[in-house]
Image (cartoon, rainbow over all chains, first blue to last red):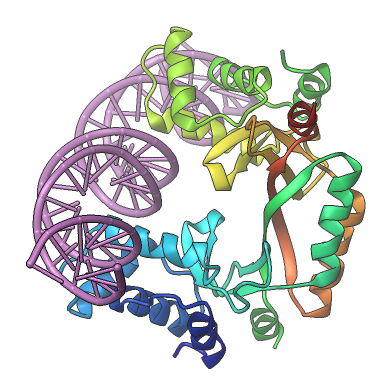
Length: 145
Length: 145
DNA sequence: TGGCAAAAGCTATTTTGTATCAGAAGTGTC
DNA sequence: GACACTTCTGATACAAAATAGCTTTTGCCA
């Protein structure tokens, strides 16, 4: 389920993808909607990885986030996999009100405009999160048809 | 503490600013850093408004958010006052890692570029939140001097 | 094989946010 | 005034999200 580009990235970076981390990453890639931390606990439990506690999942998420493999959708308290690990500090997410799908949306113009604008007012950006809520194309089409 | 532009806005919109809502709005305007919900409970308690429960504060925040008087900083689970109520659906925030100051940053180019880009991929935006973390000008100057 | 570091486990707690039902206070209407 | 009606608040309980602190396991490697 995990794309080869991602597994290749992990190998290149020599990341230790333990069973727990693998299950979590797998599950995130199997779903299009953002996944909640406590759902991941349940997933681990079902996969017979003992009876994991919150800290276990949060530590794994921490690791995956630090490596850029996962994004947190702050507005939903949920997580999605990153399609381009190691390639951006500016994360742009589109979240459909209707189907809860969450897509990464990486637009270079936008990504470059933000630091440009901030430079004018003396703000030095380290990381940014853009979360846009609305209706995705599929749902728009479904409604009008 | 609440700017006259804001009180004028409330009057124009005929908003019922009850004592609880006033204390919350006051407190948000007195501080430059984002305020947490449970800190607001404490503030109300200190102002001798009984012993408020979480729901009380969240209801007030809900109201203030719906009226556009307050923004939630999702990445921090905290709240700041809005400087331009009723004027934007796209919220842009700059959060300083160093001093925790949170500023609204309303750039028209940015605000108009986002829907433009999204239109190309068929996403209909309803609302968006941009949260940028980094170092504000004051802190940058303080460090280099 | 002894020592180290990273990962995972465990227990408990804190922080954040909702659901629900009941009561109080204002407003308009007959 | 009696009445419905709405809005706000109070109170209890609970659910959900996240962290703290400490122990144990595991793999590595010198």
